[in-house]
Length: 284
Ligand code: PMP
Image: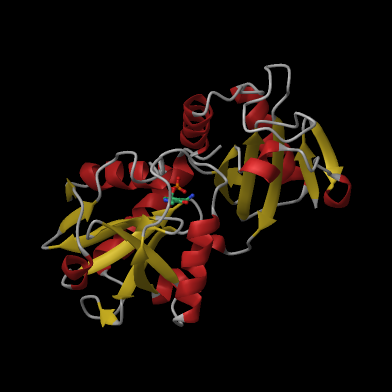
């Protein structure tokens, strides 16, 4: 693979970052994942807006212009001949040359890394057709989940918990209510109404979430932004998750209880179609 590191395109084996990089020592970095379908970037502008929001929230410099980010994404798609896949982008507070809790001075340049992951047939993954099964686990992450930091240890542990239980993913629960999935936003549908937790510091403001809710409202579907319990979700007609890599993926089982018919729900599948169709229209 050809990867991007601080303005250079390098073979992945030659892209090296210091052991003193703040991302390595402090998880002091933010990231984005953009999907590529047919060589085009989905929701690119939304991801860029959120990147800048994450950087701002952590008082981190933004090292590149919007045009630079777009150019680098397109260059990586081209250099790696990506048709379908993902582009990972990370910006860290850089390498101060030593370890210290205090932020380095402003002359420490952020470290910018981008790489591709080829996923042929990303839009017709088996998970989308079959639906996924989830378990609930306590949400033990920090309380600024709206900032997309590389501090992913807890979601990683939760994912392993799900694997150990023989299912696909975990939904995180705090004070009795579902916050979101390990790497996606969580939804239920009851009586035709789409229900998903409202935006706050408690969840990541999903770019796919924003698009799906917009398309749902445009299609005259009812949307309610509020939190819900696992019990309510288990009694729902349908459930699903959204993310840049999963698009809209139906959830068919929660903590061993089948949702609705136990098969992917019709509305969830319809939302997936609408999302893919509409997003591809504006893909870059
Ligand atoms: N919540 C969490 C915790 C996530 O990690 C992600 C994906 N990065 C999402 C939600 C979905 O966000 P998006 O639609 O922007 O990919």
